[in-house]
Image 1 (spheres, rainbow, N blue to C red):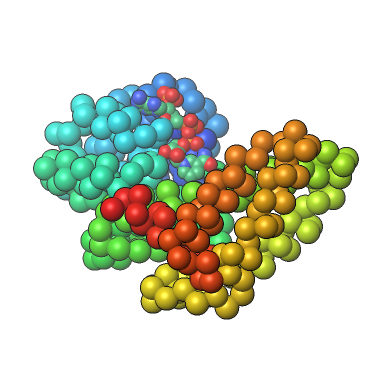
Image 2: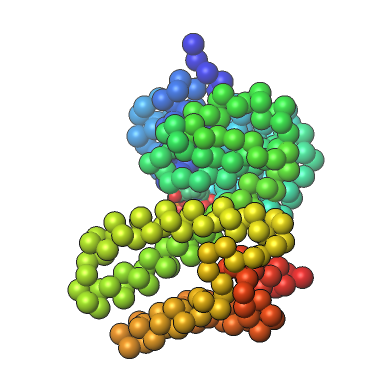
Length: 291
Ligand SMILES: NC(=O)c1ccc[n+]([C@@H]2O[C@H](COP(=O)([O-])OP(=O)(O)OC[C@H]3O[C@@H](n4cnc5c(N)ncnc54)[C@H](OP(=O)(O)O)[C@@H]3O)[C@@H](O)[C@H]2O)c1
């Protein structure tokens, strides 16, 4: 039996993957892109390409949009405002929480129900059982469409009734990703100065990351309890090793900025009297920057 008809707006790499997953699961799928003709393979496989955004929105009760940013969402959907009423708009475009909330308010003004989602995966992983997509919005609306949305990823989850939360999770998780990428690039550059190939260094780095991830459990509890007794290493203990990293980087002509930043975080906290606390005490620095 055919599934719920869906429209997917945005035929970039991600939009094409989303439409493919819906089609594979038997959902009649309409597609639309600002620049036409970007998804010939999907049309060949049975998707119907709408000639305009209005026709695309009008084609299905469930409209998924995934484009570059929220400005593009509003630009694309502006001509279709009159046909939004009674439909469900699922916005899988990456953005910030304030943009998600403003877009939900705009959708409501035009009579559409709204879910916002953050895709924590690259296009080849769309449809896989482990793929995580975080949603925010009305629990009953989510429940109604959960089965359809789950074809995009087995880890599809409603994290909040607040449509802004998926974007916040998204940027927070991406921040961890980039910090980790940068740490690895710095390390690989250091090792490369002794001709250790990145692929040879990799197994040690990935095992180390597992250990590092395990330290976070204790730190998370300390942050929530606002209590930072060092159970592993004190801030004071970590100053010499970070200085070694700075020195080692400099003598090898490698940018030491990240290590210098870590040194700054440590020495700031120590100067505030926290020399014997755990690394979790560094949370104060980030909280103070937003206070
Ligand atoms: N790729 C990933 O790994 C990944 C992972 C998670 C989340 N995401 C998010 O998914 C979204 C789409 O990413 P993507 O990888 O599909 O990007 P992409 O391949 O660069 O495609 C961008 C899409 O946005 C459209 N677009 C750009 N500017 C527009 C405008 N001003 N008006 C209307 N349409 C516009 C493009 O249409 P044209 O073809 O007409 O230019 C195209 O459909 C982004 O928010 C991205 O952050 C991507």
